[in-house]
Image (cartoon, rainbow, N blue to C red; front, top):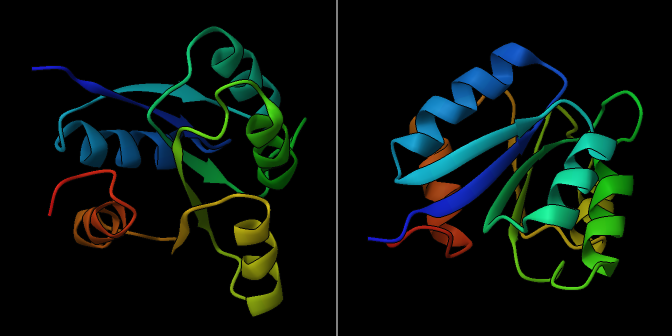
Amino acid sequence: MDFKTCLIVDDSRIIRKVARRIVEGLDYEVDEAADGAEALAYCTGVMPDLLLIDWNMPVMDGLTFLRRLRAMPGGDGPKVLFCTIETRPERIAEALAAGADDYVMKPFDGEILQSKLTEVGAIAA
């Protein structure tokens, strides 16, 4: 069986670890990046099937990364979930307009993440 790939982009090692455990349990191969610049370099080499992106990160934030990702060749392919503490509707609308498939509020658990991934078609229902 082909494993799907996921890149978790977050400056918090703890968040990356929690998300990794959940996503690996859903049959994804997982890699991690600590900021948007690192994630962009990764995607230049290998385009993952799924990205979980934090909004507020040093070097390059999630929104800037997402806009650059979607402009790359093949960058329209991955499913993208914003994982954020951002609750203002206009900010969430901005993320969706920039190309996010959906968003999940932090802190999230396996059940929440799994249901969001099902909604965007990243995992089978």
